[in-house]
Length: 438
Image (cartoon, rainbow, N blue to C red; front, side, top):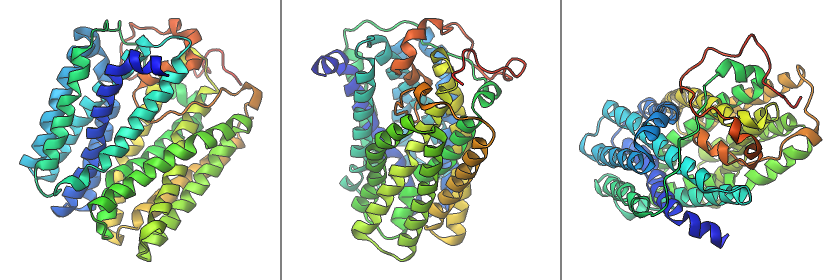
């Protein structure tokens, strides 16, 4: 592990600084928007703009990285994000913030494409799995730490937006000073939504529904925490509890899915996530604070956040390893579709019925996922447990992170690096993906 940190030190340090800023910024925006009197629907649209542009950005960033290289691309994306962070404090308007979040989503996608493709280039067959684990730890720890920068200044002022700008600018330093050789061309794949839907309808639809639920939480969770009377420390703790819960329960839930029908585990997890949402709504309605509130949101995060990884793992069970990166792009687009719809819908519910309705909304979405998973279990035989791939945690990220999946190493040479990135009509004549596992 020490060798990994030495080899990847500059990249992981840039990732940590970048994720600190990216952890603080959306929470700060939700809190400041609430203080400024933005409605739940307006805040939902602001959040949707970020998720939509992040999904698009993961695709259109690849040609730029190929053209000008990793360090220059990182510098351009970071400069724009730093500028947009400060601009939030200069122009406080819902539509202006919607545009700023759209630009931010595009650029953050580009930043993560650079980092993840670079990390993959430096990885070897022997350390690929370990590198992916450390990458997850650094990212999650920094995002969690970013939440606790919120109490350091008044969210109604400009100081915290300036802090985000400083962090994004500082993330340039380790990458800019690295002596390592830049990696080669970034692997890209086509986005064949119909093709991969035919491969795994549950994987694709599951990501849409998970995007709707988690997009609503990430976009509006901090507003809900503020609306129920929490201070800055409480808001940071509320959001962090969900992140920590997801980090703690993701691997145990994933490992269970390695030994049973993955759809069954997904169904149970979706049902429990729905129940945890209703329980959290009840806690908020009863105005119960303290440990009960944070435990409730921790269980919600612990059950809701692994669902994306389960959908990815289920999709990969029906694909050849060489398809993982391309499937990752399709699943990311599916997630973005849900995250575009979820936050505005949940925001309107909050405006009409109060803060607890956010988690009634997520419970309804998770209930739909449960029902669809049960339906799919009647339409297709399960992949035998012995033929399922090993569960690998897959947080919502760029398709480049799927190249780090140790299972794909054997077929990385089959990726078509020269493919034009863009939407495709669908599968070829309705055929299943090559060399399916079931």
